[in-house]
Amino acid sequence: MHGVKFMAQNSRRQGAWRFCQIAMLSFLLSTVLQVGSVAVADASNRLLLADLDEQAESLTVLLRTSEPVGYRYTVYDSADPVRVVVDFPDMEIGDVAEAKTVEAGVVSEIRASRLGLASGNLARVEILLARSSEYQISLDGTEFRIVFAPSVAEPAPQADAANVVASVTPTAVAEPAAQAATAPASVNQVPLAAAANLTQLTVTDGQAVVTLDGRPTVYREFTLTNPSRLVVDVLDVKPTFRERSFPAGEGFQQVRVGVDKVKTRL
Image 1 (cartoon, helix red, strand yellow):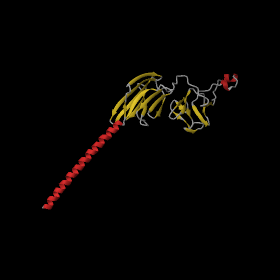
Image 2 (tube, one colour):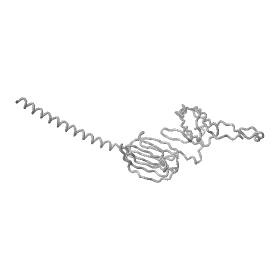
Image 3 (cartoon, rainbow, N blue to C red):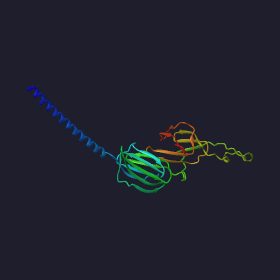
Image 4 (cartoon, helix red, strand yellow):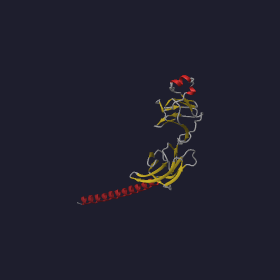
């Protein structure tokens, strides 16, 4: 009996010791989780600035954050009103005005707001536009830029021959028989039809020769950063070839071809 009593007491002591161990582990785990959640909250990124970049040559909206964004963002266009929307997940809004009227070019207003979602906080920037406009995204550490292209309605700058050379292949245009009989056969008197196709792109050291099947209606060129590049937009034309990347030299790494419903971009 004495042996049985001793075993029962020893079992009770071991059970109490296990209970203390479990209680201590639960306390430690709870403390670690609490500290971890505070650390995550403190590490949350913050939107510090949403305004025009007065130092930029092109119309640019600058968004500055406390930490680099990387590729954790979403950009899309929306209508009614016409605007560009930029969403940053897991980001807080710092001391940024909820709405700021700017009236610069196509940009009329910049809005910043915070959305509380089940997955976490979402910082949203809305850039209200007077009309639809093309734009490019530029990232540089904690600075996120939306660069708007010059308006098509403005006089289009002529491309510098040192940067891009446009070679137009004339397209024969049928003339009335009476006029053709009297007019001398001169290429200068034959009006070129508006180009519809980009038929060839020849890249050599120092230049890219663009061949069209008619005269270009509107084209423009400008520069962007991150990466540094020269952009040439030719409106209302489509390439007839499938290649979308060409090797280059003399300071250029490559020439890329992009196509959308209104233009071809080099």
